[in-house]
Image (tube, rainbow, N blue to C red; front, side, top):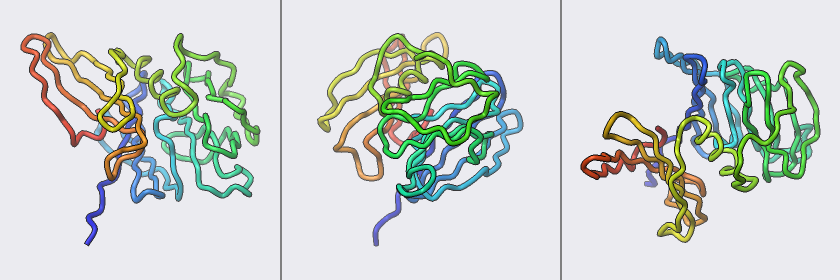
Amino acid sequence: MTRAHPPRLHVLLASDASTAVVIRRGPSRHTAVVGWDRATDRFKVGQWLYGRIYERRCDLSPDGKHFVYFAMNGRWDSRARGAWTAVSKAPYLKAITLLAKGDCWHGGGLFASSKELWVNEGYGHVVLEDEARIQRTAPYPWHEQYGGECPGVYYVRLQRDGWAMKYTAPDSAGGTVTMFERRINTHWRLRKLAHSTLHHPVGKGCYFDEHQLFNARTEQVIALPNWEWA
């Protein structure tokens, strides 16, 4: 009997509000978006999608009201062309801005403010719906480029949200690992090891994270291999 892998979780925190969006993937083509009220610690299921949401190309507006995401369901003859970037009212998926993509190169975006959005254009989108209150005029929000796929959005988001990039190096699986670090208190640091590899562990995607706690005073490292997100 094959053991099922637990769902993958990824969380987007609103910087100016006590809300968050949890993206739950699993089984592989089933994705749920869940609202999290961090003030009351209550959760509310927004919507399910039979398809893939690329969580590392997503973002939540600072006020927690809007969610930008990149999704793929493979229905290439549909109006959204099988893969699309959308802005919705969190934690739902119904698009108020809908940008058809037609492939999985680039896509997604980052909020520069609660009313300004940078879209990871790449080869471009076809505009199907456009919410005028969300301005798609923001310039590229970082001084370094990390490519058009997940790291090109995710690594920028991490650094914007307070993570310091420490290094990028080859990993043991023939890909790369990029270490980010964030201070917890005087001595302890939280480390995020962001992997990019085609030879990933079973149950993980080509982009996955591991975590560690690091004590800067004693140099003690506590590995946390089962932490999906932190």
